[in-house]
Image 1 (cartoon, rainbow, N blue to C red):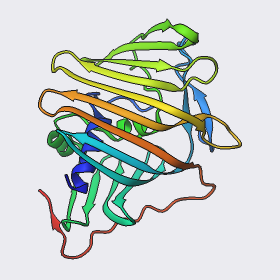
Image 2 (tube, one colour):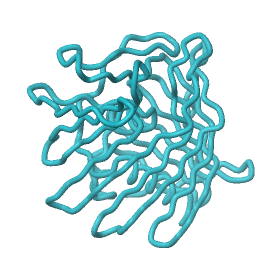
Image 3 (cartoon, rainbow, N blue to C red):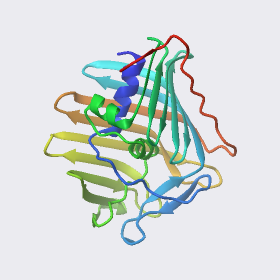
Length: 262
């Protein structure tokens, strides 16, 4: 499995079998948080809110018996850009930049690149993938129920909340931490018609920013089950998460001589 396959596998497990969802709106400000769904006060959930974010960590993907690890570097501008660099031993193998309507990937090992939209990527991976999904799942944020849908809210042991609602043919289930924390501890998405399931567990919560100590999951374990691909897992561990005070750059340029994938 080369580094491009790794990146696509990450997109596969992060996109999972979820359908396109309405992105959560939140106020800006480093490390601040906003309670979601004001019309449903019984749901206690808090999402990240920032202008820019940097993440460094490691990922290991297991797909069809093959294991592949990589160092990850991620830069984000909220609701606008996700920039990813993946490599090993100081060598960058893949660089990608995702915007709300485009996906661009450079594979430095094979000297190829991809440039297109989420429709093509969704067909390639056989799962719906959107910018909003990638951002929300990378951050461990709560996906609110769509307008007109009332979620089922159940209080479990230790005061945790389990919020369940249907979304375009699938069932979305969030397990929220107790108290005022309101962070997503587990996300499950199931599609009975296609027998596809996605489970995302968030652990190792640490303050996102010293001035605004919203808990942020530094470890994510993803399990995706699909008839065609079988079981796919991804263990993602962040060792450095920062909310920078200034703006970030998102360098991306296709070198001359690289072949475009079609």
